[in-house]
Length: 275
Image 1 (tube, helix red, strand yellow):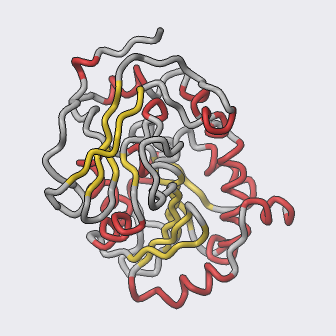
Image 2 (cartoon, rainbow, N blue to C red):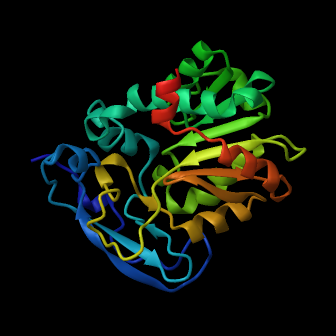
């Protein structure tokens, strides 16, 4: 059995919601640390149980679901137990399949904007998505301080497009507002930038058995549409759904342009067929 020292975890109930500051939380349920996202797709468990249950709680006000179990962990603890050499087993498309598909989708949907501007992939891991976009003809950079800053100049400028694919659910609850503000700070001051982020939002009526709650993947902060809108608004951004699990974030004054972009958006399958 894999091991995890439960004494390093904070397993009691949190005092409130970091998104909307409400104090009223409900116990959402607990899951063994070994549950991985790939279990859902493979039909079997990727890792054995660790024998350590991770409790999740939901804000009654905004619907945000989170755990504070890892609040005392250092970055090194996350690398040791989650983002280690076995991480790709919990999410096989992470290494290249997903970045390649996302690059085709973004290029097909935002080509005109990218031909006249630059893109930053915020939380871009090993930089695979940005590399795929550069091969397609975009000026693209990757920034991920936890994975290693791939493109040094990325932190010194703003961008026309900022992407962040399946990152926000990995950000601890207390760091959510800081993360969103950092994303917003990479956008142009004139309010003409567009951000595109992906994450699965908590379905109404689901409980701890929802597949996207997978501690072994590092999924520790799960948004509802309401909590995501509140978080973005605190940084001056408005959220617009593009398709399930994909969202556009922009200044409120760009609503018309965002609507036009969404109307012409291509899915990953459509982009692959056109490529």
